Image 1 (cartoon, rainbow, N blue to C red):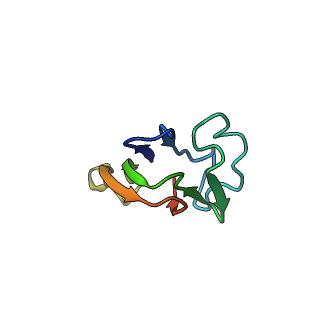
Image 2 (tube, rainbow, N blue to C red; image 1 turned 90 degrees about the vertical axis):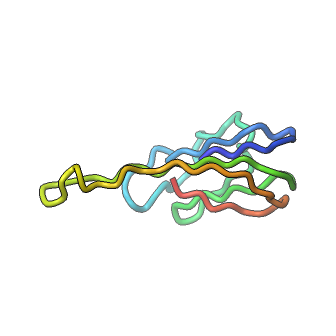
Length: 101
């Protein structure tokens, strides 16, 4: 997910898997966001990243979903293709967005 406000000191936030694998998600933030605009705006609880909106305003948000897998009984032709969604949203300072990557 990429979160970009339309006018602000805050430029952008790009969220990652924090190098986690599997269905349970990350267990620590580590140093992954050090030096980025959202370094102190992200917390982690039960594998979900929580982004605290730094200031009220309009934000451009872009998210992408992965393609589904396939296996012996699920041919490649039947898998999902993934998707990219974009939108502009009015967010309030302190509002928390739940990020699952």
